[in-house]
Image (tube, rainbow, N blue to C red):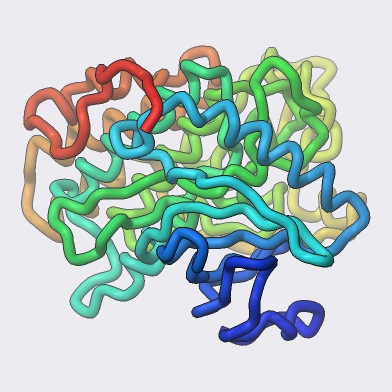
Length: 357
């Protein structure tokens, strides 16, 4: 892969610290580069995340390390969370070492030659495993803040049913101690309470997982948008108006909505023209989205024929995408949903007690 100019010195064969040698560049994000490295001290391959140089590199790294330290009490395999092996320093940066896994779920789906979407039968074990991961994160009071296909890694893409692990805790934070102004979630998977600047908790991860699950069966993100206004337009078009209580407490509500003085509906989303005139942001003229979430069931029925699993799947997705975070299904409730219990899923038992690897 081609790296940004700032990081093009990271080449195969270069040493990181005293024991790690770069074997392959796996990916590059806004804050870090991920590489396959060989750890000569332990004689094994690892995934190494190296932070890019910026003003607050140590602060960002310390926040992620704090989260990863809190996760050490969990069984990585049984909890479907990537195993962290520690950190080390180079002359110019700090690196985190993880177990080496396979490709991410987004690449796995897009690389399928016949179809770029999954059947409900294929999604079930994946959804069960990631919900299990969120169950254990919630038990520790941790919000992942960036659940999406690119952060769900396959253990071995050749294995069926697919085993996956939740990865990338760069945006994760402790639920009771965080600043809601700090960015959270990739736009296509961003919960409505985050979009309007409302306080949030672990429920935003369930929203992201619901949007991810829908995207896996549809073959593209449920809400494929490029700005926050269009994200709100798409959500409201498909799922209806956000509650006045949520909007009243949103620090960004007035940036997107108009307050109605004499109406039963207190807030109305700005028109495209008004929003563009006030912000300079140009919304798309026509959104490409579903009319209602039940359309997902109709699409699957057309593709594969009518199945009860389709109805159960959409019912669970709707519960994950509940507009009110207080009413949104929690991980344990989701694991007890008929989509999982009527057909025993593959993967570790979520009720396994916590404990170290």
